[in-house]
Image (cartoon, rainbow, N blue to C red; front, side, top):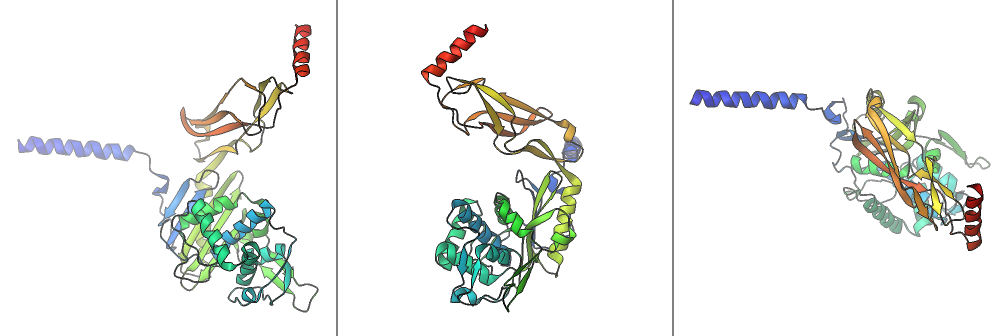
Length: 386
C-alpha cells in the first residue's frame, strides 16, 4: 500500500515538473549584472515591464526629481500660463541654493527657456527654484503641485519635499514610479528637445558667461538616447532616468542607488542593450494616420476620415512578428452632427487569434448637420445619378 502511494506521488511530481518546464518563461527570467539597488526597463508605448529589480523599493531620487519640475513647467507652457520667452527674475531665496547650480544672482533675469536648459543640462538647483516660484508663487506651493501630479500619475511610492532633489528624509520615490513619470514626460516634445541639448552658453554678452554641459553622458555614447535626468547625493548614490529610441522601439529605464561613479550610465546601457537585442516594436498605424472612412447621414459632408486614438503597435520578442495580425471593426454610418474624437470602432492586434491590445478608432473632424437645402440637393443628385 505504501509502495503504491509513493509510486503515485512520484508520478504526480513528474507530471508537475514536465508541465512547469513547458510553461513559457516570463520576460523577467533574465539575470542582468546590475549593482543598482533598484532598476526597471519599460516599453514606452505600452508601459510593459521588460526587466525589474526591486522596482517598488523607496529610495532617494536626488536630481532625477527635476524631471517632475520640467514636466510641470511643460504643462504650464501648454496651458498658456507661461511662455518659453518669458523673462524671469531670480529671488534671493532661489539664488541662495548651491550644490549643482548656474550661479544665479538675486534679481538676475533670464529667459524661461534658458532656466529650463539650466535645470535639464546643468541640474541647476537654483534654476529649479526660480521656475518653481514663477509657476506657483512659492517653492512650497510648487511642491504641492508635484505631489498632486505624482498622485494623478499613480506614483504611489513617491513623496516630494522639494523641487530639486536636495536630500530630505521625506523626499523619496521608486524606480517604478519614475518610469510612470518618464512615460508621461514623453507627451512633451519640447522637453525631449531640451533634454537632448549637449551644451548651451548663457550670459554671453556679460563678464559672467557660463556654459551648461549636459550631465547625461549617454547622449554622446549611446545613439538614440534623448532624455532625461541624472542624480547624485551621498545618500541617494548615482541615479538616472533615461529614454532611448532605435527604429520604432522606445525604451525607458530607471536605475537608482548605483554605488560607483558612471555606474548609472553603464547599467542603463546594460538595460538598453538587453531591451533592444531581445525585443522589437511592430507598428501598424501612426497616431493621426487615416485608417479609413465611414458614411455620415444628414451631414454637410457625406463621409468622414477615421484615425486611431494613438499609435497602433505592439512590443514583441524578436522573431514573433509574423504571428501578429490586426482586425478593424467600424460602424458603417453615423448621423450628423458628428464631433471630432467620437469613437466609431476599434482596431485589435491579435497574436495567433488572441487579442493582445485594442485601440479606439475616432472621427477625425467635426461634421455639422446639413441644412434642408443641402439634404434636398443630395436627394436630387442621388435620383439623377441612378
